Length: 291
View 1 (cartoon, helix red, strand yellow):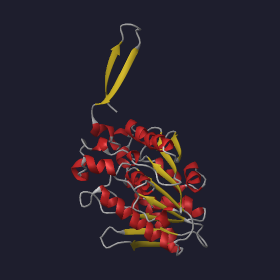
View 2 (cartoon, helix red, strand yellow):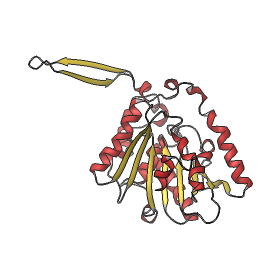
View 3 (cartoon, one colour):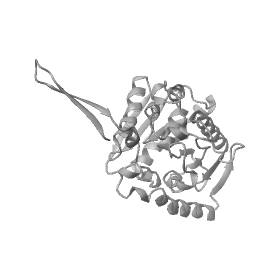
View 4 (cartoon, helix red, strand yellow):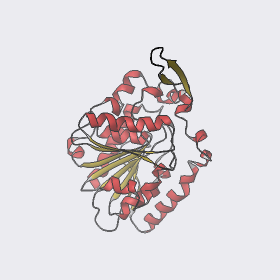
């Protein structure tokens, strides 16, 4: 992050007080240009995702493009373990609410599927064709549709904008019905965006069209957690300073509001490879989600 730093030296003690202010909000939330070989993504996800889908389809353990609503992007994919599922994991994709779809992330189901869980990957209408508040409702509808198919405990995870969306699902103003919320065990927000107000002055807002009112209503960090929330905020230690701050912010605030929270900076991980752990059944990210 490019910071404007102002230094004030007190006359009486000689102590140095350093104040930081973000001078370029677009750069603060820009990932690709600040990651070595960052232009390799999202294409780097395409082949492993396709290979995993093809494998599960050949085994008769995948259903693709299940409709949960009436709009073109109201679809989710469902990957199944051998035998009766132990429960359901829902992974919500990122892309700043304005790009990508479920097809990039299929391989991330492998960790949970190997442990006997079904995994649903929904997509949603993108901005500017929908507002973030609309997307929140769509994701709740997708989770509800998947939960009707699979019994047992429900664990939620999502990356970046998806981290925001799964955090909203366990906030006090979640659109999920009480009977679905009671099934939620663990929620992991991966590199999540939990306070949307800093996005207001960025170029991202040309499509998001956020107002201050909507940013406040849709920011988990400005909301009360729901009942019996177990939230873990997980981020790459090599990510942009704003993503580190956003990660720690929600865990910090919700701990003070009675939720059970955890927070972790995974070493040697950036914004585009931080989700890789979900594909590995033995990775701490997968084990934390299912614990």
